[in-house]
Image (cartoon, rainbow, N blue to C red; front, side, top):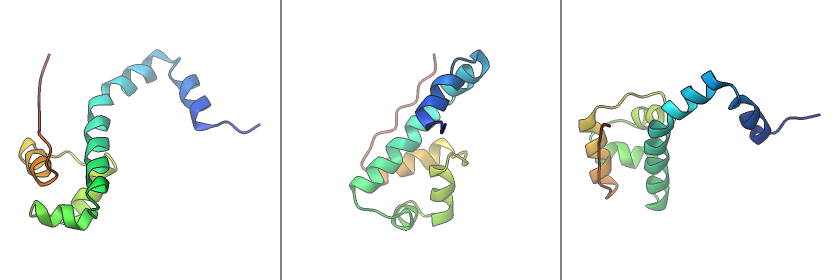
Length: 91
């Protein structure tokens, strides 16, 4: 029997350690998802976004794969380029 991703995720999240890590990464994934969705909505390639912020396409690719660790300055540039606002908070 083949396991779907949804089934795998449901089963995995029953593990408290996995669930804690998954929830800890939530804000990062939301930022990445917002960047990708807005870039696509505008019809922009990764290259066009990179050029708009004075960077290179591999930087955007890495960020969108969740492998980057952008500074607040970089996130601010991306937000401005994509006509978004950057909001940062700590609780």
